Amino acid sequence: MDVPYDLTSYVRVLKLASTPSWEEFSRVALIAGAGIGLVGLLGFIIFVIMNFVPGGV
Image (cartoon, rainbow, N blue to C red):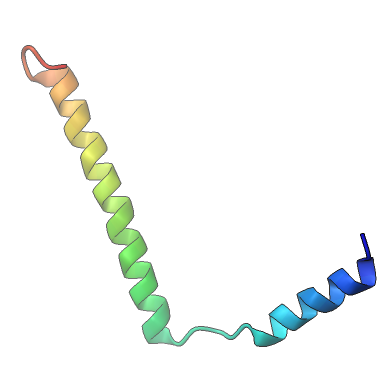
């Protein structure tokens, strides 16, 4: 493992990386939030079916 080589590659990646614009950040946050909400809704539906529906799974 060549530490100086690894550090230079990390520095190169950090120089290429840029801060996202507000529009890009908000779009990614909206999509991630929608995904989290969808998974939570699916879990809640499964919970309701297993606990409150007679003859549930």
